[in-house]
Image 1 (tube, rainbow, N blue to C red):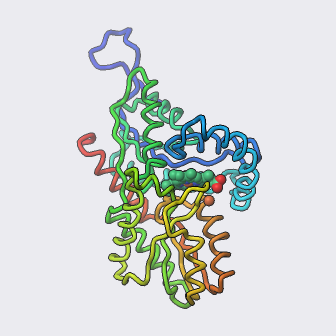
Image 2 (image 1 turned 30 degrees about the vertical axis):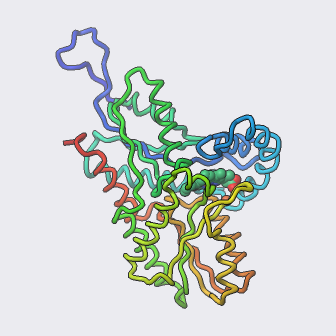
Length: 349
Ligand SMILES: C=CC1=C(C)c2cc3[nH]c(cc4nc(cc5[nH]c(cc1n2)c(C)c5CCC(=O)O)C(CCC(=O)O)=C4C)c(C)c3C=C
Ligand SMILES: [Fe+2]
Ligand SMILES: [Fe+2]
């Protein structure tokens, strides 16, 4: 319930106003509401019509998207989502994990700042939408909002488009809250430490140490890098900092890029080709982690843990360990809470 009261010294007939709060709105990519053809089509249409994701001119891309991609892909992607779906809650894993992260993060913020801070999450595509969640926060009396895209590495296709959607939603507010966005945290020591600890934990449980750790990042067209997107460089830096924190040498950890979409050249090496090459080069045991994803999703649970695993085993590999994303791991939530507290500087003093 929104806490409303008449401002001090205001006339008797002044409308009651909601209390002055600070909102922290966590944001992730989005996910379909269901796995049937139309739910998948609606989601993919919104996602793949975003010019931050596919930057081709509309006249060129929209006929290909509407007449070719969206007649086929909703079937194949729907089948992939069905294989990982959370049937108990009837939602995608990304949504289940984002809810768990938000609950833990909200508890951390309440411990630190009490009830002046309100925490919620939204998605860039699909539900819960960014405009709907911004409206709820404003309605609850948030006059300041910290918008927090949950992508460790900045990409135009993720961080910037999430921010764009938030700014568009702000345009519709008659009393616009003061707003800040949280920058990428690819080199944040607490995030690197949380990743390192998750890897140390996984390695301690594997019988026979993996010969190499593959850090598989979601890919993007190579052209975006040459046009100035820093994503590739931030991924490389995350891997280097992780290696230094683990105290490993360069032969024990590499960066690769997955999820190629379309015919253009994407960032290389491609994970699916690299794991097969490693197997053919005699590596029998590998581990794979996915530092660009704050939550496990179709790209990790299906693409890495099924397709990329198969590619390694078919090429002669013997042991493939997928190390889950940080999800609602305490060290991850502590890292996110530390970043948020820093970015709130001056608002709660
Ligand atoms: C983590 C960073 C991400 C970048 C960079 C990114 C770029 C990017 N993605 C596509 C196309 C697709 N991505 C899809 C799923 C997806 N992508 C990310 C993250 C990044 N994408 C996440 C977290 C997810 C999972 C969502 C979930 O519900 O689990 C998909 C949909 C899945 C499918 O149909 O296979 C597509 C398509 C492009 C073209 C792109 C380019 C910059
Ligand atoms: Fe993607
Ligand atoms: Fe994929």
